[in-house]
Length: 535
Image 1 (tube, rainbow, N blue to C red):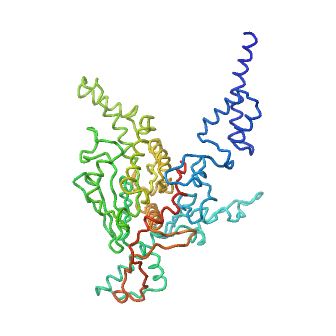
Image 2: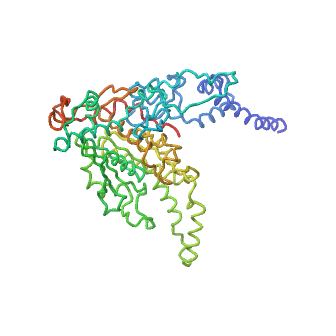
Image 3: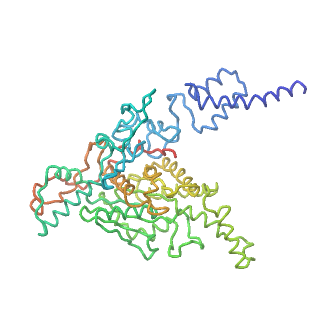
């Protein structure tokens, strides 16, 4: 024993130091790869159990299996549904992809770092997302003001980005649709004798070429009032009016349609009243009789199903969905209103006092993370929700999870939202769903909110519209890359007749068969854009 005890003490003393040193080497390493650390070091150790323990510790911290037939930077992850192995193997630990492996035309400009340019002296229609990667921002020459050494104080102007950066950014479909609709409106009024005929200029003819694809499209958005208000603003920007279609089932928390007649474009909103699987007796809004998404689909959404059928005659052309804010409220209310056996013995005054206390502490208070039980519940229901959408609309329907927005003055109250967004991102990757990163692009613009929770009309609503139209264009068969339109969707019709309200009208060759691009083109770049992206 006297000889053993010092050795045991030495192991207890040196083992934590050795583990810490190795972990520091892993994280901040000097060029050595993690795999070579965890395998080569062990190989030279001749079976030392201490280093075997270190290897186990490292593998527990990093939940990826390492394969000898891959490059050092590649990790073998579970492959998300519908993702080929050569793509999923490029997903890194931070949720990103090796951009060099993505075909340039498949790189999503809204999912790479960039700058939201909000022009000071122009209409918010001209708001522009400028991706740093596609515009080669990192190659911009260093200014003299950044030189060292110097005794000159840097001076900066409020000049807009150079036109070359705007031109290489994602196409501004939002502004173009506005101009296109105005031309159609002018021609329609001229055809009815209210205005003179419109003679299309060369630029207007090119505009017709670019916007022909947008006719007859259907977009379905499942979410809450944040989404519904964006649809409302979108509709009003094109002088149309959205309306509720199922008010008897819960007022504004039902179904909502925005229809733009000039292009026969419809954007529908189906309200998701959290992911709770039933309606608790304590539900805070009496007029909402259906809560579970399964019940709402069967009894609330089916009657308006025909409104969301797109060009393929079967499904919407694009689906955007999310759930979070209502879940956050439901979790708090669940704790506040839970009926404990001892509550039955309390007087009305005592029960009200206890309810008041529950609002300030424990799971009933606002401004906390989700409890582990809540997180597991949300994970389960969100996964079922995504699979349910796939079951109802088919695996080929273009679908995006809309990242969750935070409150105007983001603080501890947003912790639960952040929890739910993180797990939803990972589930989306596993289920083969891409992400609509509008929340990231809008983060920090608190002056653009209309209240404590909802984004207002302006640059951020225009960005939502631009992103929605970008994905709809891609779902319809188009390719917009590096500021240019590389491919147009199939023409679906001639929507302006020569001489009837307008002259110099371009004529397009319309395919005999209906457009079914929703089933053909999304998959082309889909696998390269299924990654959770981190938080």
